[in-house]
Length: 225
Image (tube, rainbow, N blue to C red; front, side, top):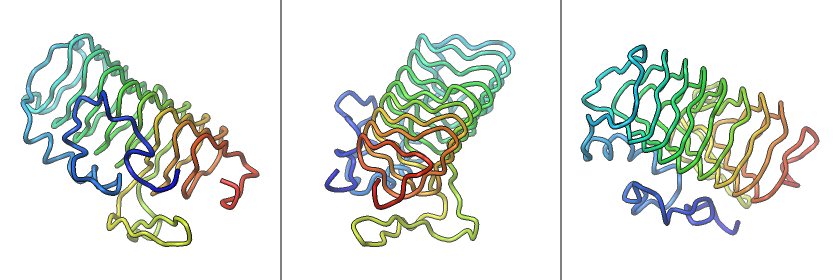
């Protein structure tokens, strides 16, 4: 990964909403475009199967694609776009400003807000995804938390190649490239970037920039990531 950019992290060639990423230099800038993008597209169409025991708040600003199943007890607040063939499982909490492409899973007790999920991204159990981007076929182990706020509530910066890059954001979770996998109960700290096909072990506290195909363990140091 020579630079932190969209090309190094994601294959967007089959993305259903490529215009969301146009004129985006740093990947976290796409998060600022979620709300304007959702306000610019047609919402209010429910083509999937939604349980009568699910809760849809502001349904006129919710789109759910064909083949998607929303189970009893799921809570979905618009505006949001959920693509085809997704699973929104019992107890899922979709808080708004969500864009999920085809084949995504938002699982039991998983909370999501102001985030982008590319094709096949899965957060099946007890996850928190705040102000984050999950690449194609990302899989979050049960209990993974993508923390989005510093304890001092300061602006989140990213250290890369000896430089400190300010994102200008006080809320920024993780940016996980295509094929990333996290172990159960791992914590992804604010502003963490994980390159394509990188892996973190269960119960690991992850921060910084993780290079593609690297494995982060308890003994990993920033220097060998």
